[in-house]
Image (cartoon, rainbow, N blue to C red):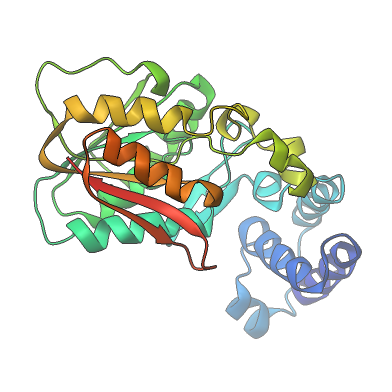
Length: 283
């Protein structure tokens, strides 16, 4: 018979050689909360409760996947983002704190307005669109992705967490120009990792997260941004805003591209680590 506290300690001990103590502790907490229903407070207050064999088997199976190199979020099928629990799979990127920062910027800039119409391009799990639908009063959010598998995950998340999000399949490189300006803002966290950066990336990202959502050609680092900006010139209403998450090495080229494309008040903002991470511009 194994208690919740004992299982947590065993999971942490098993994962520490692979992940390091701090990350192993976090992974063990996620497993205990998402699979066994023991968040940190319950683990402290009620950790002597015996776990069922079925629960122990599920915890061990998820730990096996992590030991094999899979990210913990894929192992449990969920990731946290902006206070939400999102379903994830290897069809979508795992939402990251940098992207939470993008949501925070948009809410800070637009949160006092009502009835906004927005578009999230390359939505993946739907994390940005859903967070904005919940934070922007009476907003109408559309979101698109080229991947059917990603849209299926986004549909599940939107159904659980937000109302009024319209999901559709579209290629960010070939978005059809609208008949009239439609959106108050457009946001995107498109592929932006260069092949030359692979050497510095975690194997768990390279081996498990979708390359389609990560990489751009070495000689075209702004490929998606140029296409989306071109679309945004026609799709944004006057004074409409464009928000991007960007590669930290592309701040200056991004600012020049947006200015050359006719956008104004271009800003490059840093993330919580001090790296260039966000581009903002007005139509």
